[in-house]
Image (cartoon, rainbow, N blue to C red; front, top):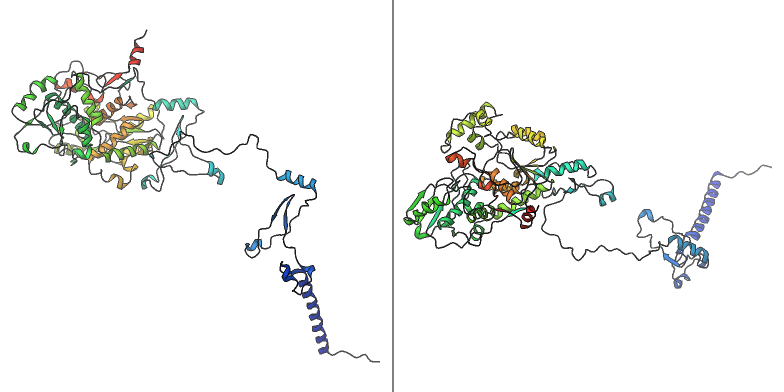
Length: 600
């Protein structure tokens, strides 16, 4: 019997029916497992799904009696968390042993003593004062090392942090070197050696300023007339001359008119008195000593004036007996020059004290100069203790003195031409080698570097160059920089906008250098000129701060008199200048120290 074979079309139909059946069964199974009705009981009865497929209202997560609910919803969770596991172990509250064991795992340690944070300031804590500058910090390490870390810059027991922020610092300083050698406090020998370099000389006897008048001092009497003063020279030569003229006005009982600053010198500075000094402070601080007026009264503007060159280094008898007679014939007398018009020594104590009050106190610089000067000091202190170097290696100094050692032939010829072209420089023919052999020439930048290195100052010592434009520029400064690479100046420490108001005026720029020099940790001068003498005297007056000048002593000592055997003007020139050393006239020993020194 022959079997009937199915047609291909019938097989295809049966295959399709079978696939549909299998797919239907699978779909129903999936719906049974994954689909649940809403948790609301009111609506669940109306749905066509059996109650057995309804999910629990919530998943309980926790341990012991502590329970919390899963706070994630798939609709708002990040995609990677939408598939996170949602089934957590539910602790059985009825199993007390397991519950207690679980609590011990999570319980914090006992706080014996009840310690709590206490970080509030004490009652003596005050708000931040006036800022000294800005602090720039470069962190290192990972997150928490950076959060806790700091970089300390300094040496010995003295530490100072860099006080600059690049956002507000002048552009040239944002690239300034910030890595300095940090002295190891554990190395006592190195630390002690470093401290000796910066330690001021011993103040044997405990000398302090004493510039108050004596009990016999009286206010100024009725004025005999007016004293006009034409100053001469640079800033500190004018300051010394003005202070002398204050004393002279007191001696002859004249009214001092605010002096006229030198505008015809080498520097061609057009500054007026009020541009350089605090004029009102000058007048008021000396009100009990001398009558001072800003201008000559109008009724005397056209009056005949006697112009007089006061004799150099004159004593009180000269002014009382000779100069004072000029006011018998003229109401206005003009002093044609102001420098060195008064003797250094052998003057009444009250006159000497008055000179000190005028020079060290009354001649305060104008507010703008004082402000920027203090800012320069703070910016230098951000590098740690520093040296202020009065590097007197400028064109005018070299031309005037005829010192050409270390210069090229063309540079020497240029200086000779300058000297010959200035009429009030009387000496024209100068032997450079003879000048140097007599000690009349400044140290070269290279010699200063060798000198400071020999004293023991390390190469990372910050140095402030208190000077104008160094002759030859980088070609000569490179020698000093090879010894001490951290060379700063007012031009480097300030932005162009900060320095611009002072840049055209030599006296005002010199005043900025003067402030930094007086306040520096160590002052070094390469030449004993007017500024070096003034700064040295001012630092003695303020407490004998360390000052280094070749062949000079720093400890308290009386002012040196003339060299034995000299006569005439040379005798006075050989004396130590009054403003270079205010001892003994303006510095006195404390009573306790004086008493103890007399004990056996």
